[in-house]
Picture 1 (cartoon, rainbow, N blue to C red):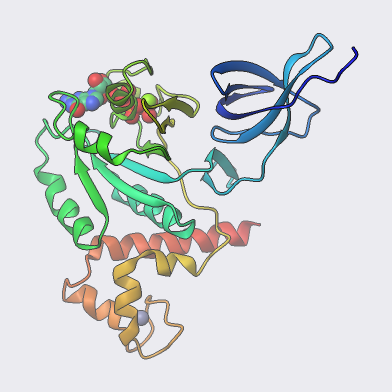
Picture 2: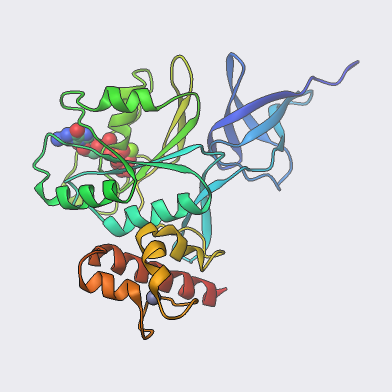
Length: 299
Ligand SMILES: Nc1nc2c(ncn2[C@@H]2O[C@H](COP(=O)(O)OP(=O)(O)OP(=O)(O)O)[C@@H](O)[C@H]2O)c(=O)[nH]1
Ligand SMILES: [Mg+2]
Ligand SMILES: [Zn+2]
């Protein structure tokens, strides 16, 4: 070797075990990782080199993450799903039955990291009477909502227009149609999808987050469906700030540091009793605060 191989820069399309699929300029390269310390995740920006040994293309460094969407694994530890995200698209559908607490947790997590959020209500071809009330409430709270269906492409073009050069991560329960949406938006994606069946409980079709390019610009990341997700509990009080209606209602509480649980003179609880704040959202808020507390105590 007379010269060191040049350093290239790229973005991780998918990370697996001790390697990663890296998009770098016009090429897509399978890279190994140098050493044992690098742990990559979809969306990471990396430097890679063609090492002179038999190792071939190798990621040698990773840039600090601007943000990272994490989920909590079975042991209560934060596990990264994707990094350097500009926008979170939370997907829900009439089938499987929506888990609104999951939607609230994702929205809260994105708000904490200043990530723009959009709620996609997919499968609008199915009867969605049960969803209408929640959808109206989220819209009232200022969350952007788009109804879509891959059955007729209704809403898909509106969604496509929203997606610009920035990176959007699709999240939501298993089976809501994230991969189907990704395929509709990026026809060359060929993301794997699967029928919903009763015995599918707990199985995920998509197993790792994967980035797909949009033409002419932008990227969408298809993530595995989640059952248990919570933003990591490093910002316990931020849970309160993530519920816009509770933050607003809290202005009238007797105590400045009111948690809106059972403190006297709580304006939030009064608003919930009068249905000015959705009791369902308030229950989500309480669950999230308790989850933070449990997870923090475990550390
Ligand atoms: N009726 C209807 N079914 C849909 C729609 N979009 C997707 N599906 C079906 O929903 C099922 C699950 O779709 P996927 O795209 O695999 O769901 P996913 O969210 O990627 O699931 P995971 O990868 O397990 O997280 C498939 O049988 C799809 O055909 C839709 O707009 N309407
Ligand atoms: Mg999928
Ligand atoms: Zn209060």
